[in-house]
Image (cartoon, rainbow, N blue to C red; front, side):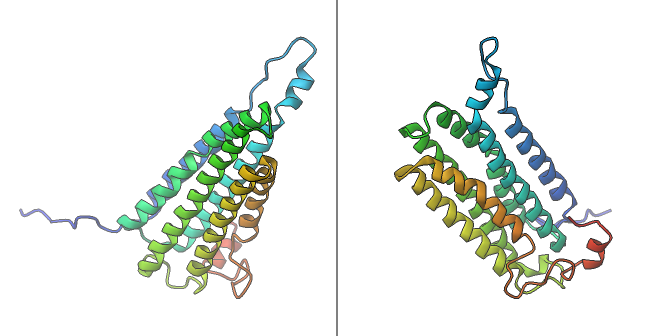
Length: 232
């Protein structure tokens, strides 16, 4: 009996990519929590020691918010994607690569700010965080670019503005994190931290798309499924 010859890389369902991605997101937020530790202190000094590590709390808040909206937007993407090819798998892995690495600059920023929020180490730390965060935004640009190149991977009833708005939001984030890094390096590191904390709010608010012409929540693809509570 002759064997069936498979193509070099066949399209696949999204189930395994979604499951693997969710696992990476879960590990990423867990790694962030590991940086919240009991601080060294003398007897009776726990309160001041806890207050002194405020940069760790702020870094956790900013990074947890970032990973959370990445997960939310990833979910919204895969509501619309019906099949994967090699290019989309590669773009998704690039996105996960940057997400999994976020705990590293978060810890660096927390340590540097706790030592001195104005010195050169703090400026280098916020530049490192901004660089990785901007790279993560660019990974979304690559993700949307692959979808734009292969529209047949999307569900047929996806709104026309989805890819265009996704790329615009991603480029906006890359620019905003770059500007935040420059503010932190040349003016004050705490300015960069403020931007890092606020930007995830932008991505959360626009997770269903930008307001100019985008279908409101509940009227896009798979609206019936969302109404049953299966979509976030």
